[in-house]
Image (tube, rainbow, N blue to C red; front, side, top):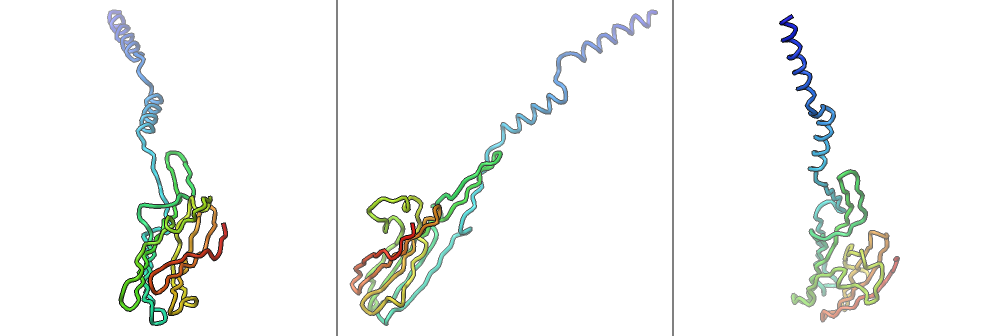
Length: 187
């Protein structure tokens, strides 16, 4: 009986100590998951078009008069956001890179025109929705329209968000004077 009297308090002590309101395994797991989620940072994923830095350089001689160098390239830190989506903690953005062109024209080994062309420099004076997300697409020498007096450059401007574009002709004479003409407007 003495053994039983000693055994009962030990059992009661074990029962009472196991019920000290500690958290169950499920509660500890929930708290761990919650703490992990609170410590997570959002992830920004950016999908660029074109994927990498792009540069296209062309050199031309027109009518043995104009020596032309056109370099079209993407600007590394500028882009037009086409769309964004957020799923869980990930934000995915599709971005169209901004293009600019460097144009150097010389006549008889003398540089008459040396400029960087971008949307900001050819933007119309009238405000339009087209210009809000527009970028230069490409500048090229239009050999068919060029002659010994005038150099004709084609200038394409696009708005990738609404799939609109404008086509310009940039005329440069032998003295370096320029004139920009709107050829097509699909905006």
